[in-house]
Image (cartoon, rainbow, N blue to C red; front, side, top):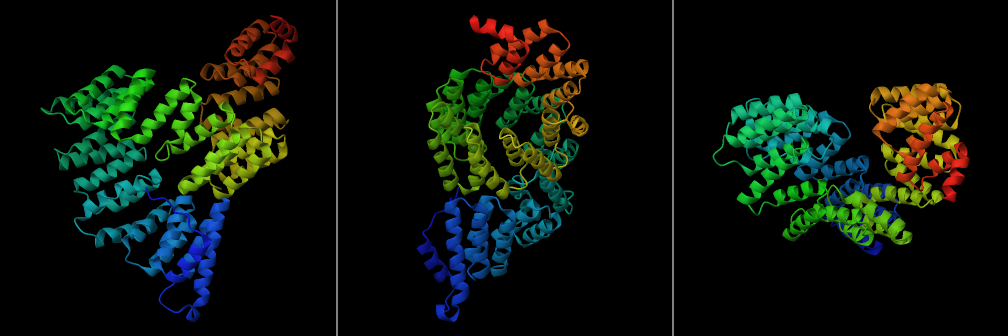
Length: 566
């Protein structure tokens, strides 16, 4: 991975003047000096953690400079920081300076796709395909790694459009099958993978996609049977097919069969690190932690799947309450799908278990500086950690920053509103939820959060009822939303109905908050034996829970006194 190198303002000024071109400074000084000034401002903004300003300043420098490297650098910085609109402006300048640069064209197409401009993205990619070397369908297939990192629905639409001219190409049909599968369209993926297999009967990859699509349809037995027949019909089964079958067995909770396939792969090809990784994950999920640790240590020694191995070794240490070792291992996970999760967990352990909150906050800052693509994630991580530390005013500042950087991020909007509620800023919290819901009108989570807040903290039960019931229509199996409905019914005095809903919620998610709600509702129906039994059960599982303690003190003070005497 390329990492952004930090430069001093003096170096940036000199670089900008040099890169401005061969003309004497006095002949064209204003644009060069202005570009240098914007680059200095961009660097200062990066150091101050003002990431949006940094991307904006580098973009302004690119627009003033005639040097393509300045535009390329501005584009790269904006992309790594996650500001696609700024990146799009910078790459447009890059193309103005070098319209034939294929790297710039690919980036431009990606950014247009991220903005939902599928037609413009398609136009650019079609030009790349037509102007490139080799066969067009081969170049189309080469787009898979690029498109796989984008929004699955948009990438699927784009790939379908790009593949239309090649209906009889196995490569094009396979490419569309892959993107259809990633978008969750199993039926389309089956159709295209089947066509690719008809065109190239000996090609394994379309068959693997077809198996995954069958699994996505929910028919694990059919998928397993299909892949088992592929292996059984071959005199020399491909290890990739065995890997696919092992994953299918895992999804069907047939662990022994999955492990059998993995062992066979390792018997035939002892150097298959992907098989070793899968064996380690199977052992981990089966809670065979000693075996999993040994496997992941072996995997780490190979130099392959390093980040995965470190992450799972950290989790094993975490489960064993070896918090110092876990934190050290999490900190080493700097790349891949587990990077942000690992850094958050390392900070939480350092702050809350090892009692070093300032070290934890510094770790998040340091990671964001070293890996700008995760810088905004670390701002949100600091907001969440400061909330856990009950440093609410500081947390709110970082939530405000994170929301400025990522106004389209639902998690950030919800976290900020929840923090305002913790700070007893009820109306501000309600306003924040309402603003977020206008931005994300189909979010069941936001409907539920706002509905529950209105039910719990106000008497606007009619609006709460509308929101919660709409959320249930979207996610009828969600225990959190069912709990909200039960609590709303309780607040409305409908205790029998409340108990019915809260019992469903608790059966699906035995959380102490749900238990506290159910105890309250049972008590209102004078079902005190049931209420006390549930309360004591939940207390044993959650001995330090404030909600349960409050319910006991309010509902059963005598029982609380007896419990304390004991």
